[in-house]
Length: 301
Image (cartoon, one colour):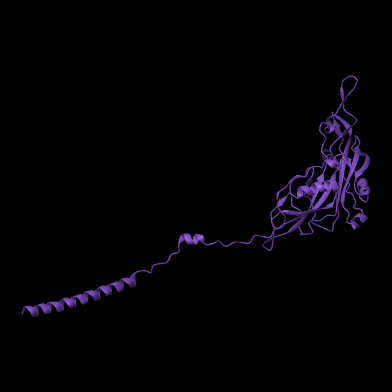
């Protein structure tokens, strides 16, 4: 009787175990169906490590100057007091360094000083089709001799008469920059046809005596190409200035006048005009250019 009871209990326990296991697996299956899927989120650091998409640089329109060296007025030009405009052509490498400089026009002594300075300049790389390329540019420089030490411009000069009173001189030397601001009537020189046909350009320097009334009293050429000098003189003779006063009295003026003849145009190598690189000072490029290469434009100051 005892053995029979044990066998019955064993069978009951087996059935109970099967039912428990079946219920466990069923509950696990149902929970797995109801649970939302786990999202596989990317690692934030891995996202940051991905390289950002690069935008190609835009094409350049001008050569941008990042470093310049001021040309010094050459000591070899002092005895003759050479002045005027020179033009040099610079070839700039892919990284912005000046590779070569050649003289286009102007006095060789002044032009060499400009070339030596330009060799030390630095530009931003010129971009074309999203790549840095070589570029070329023509640069004009205006040179004027420095005032000698201890001999200032004599607009404040005076002499004394026998009574000791200060009397203004009858004529004084005035810098070209000062007298240029006093002009009231200017005639533009006509570009000589022969010079245009020969594509001749350059600077004419004239020494002028301006009367108390502001008229050109005397004029002589200091430097300039013979084909350009007559046209410059014919125009300047018609210029008129405000009277120059010293101590309340009008006086005659001795000064220099520079007339620049240039076949207008930008940079034929790139189809761009030279960049603006600052105000004009002795030995500094002038930023003014004309975008029309077919026009002629004698410039004067």
